[in-house]
Length: 114
Image (cartoon, rainbow, N blue to C red):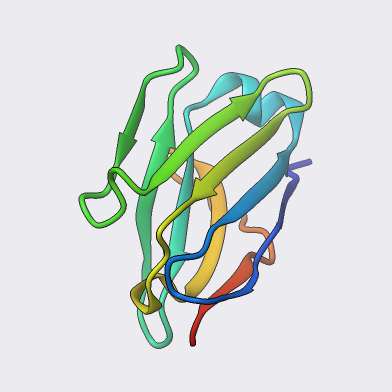
């Protein structure tokens, strides 16, 4: 059973920070690279950041230097630390494996607005 439960979203002002979490089923978490994706209104989901099982990371150019992805292997939890948020980061954020499987969680909404 695939479990992907995102949390931590909310509304912040530009320049603010948020920490997103995603609890993942153990088999999925320990078997695959994991990633954060986001979906802007009316758009397809897009890649944000990836954390491989060996700890290597990769970021979309739009978030590099502002976002940080991490894995809590004891809790099968994927983390996304987001700093210096801008209105352009407003989206629903999802986690999934990389490459993504067919099942998605409910996502967590991030709103950056003054």
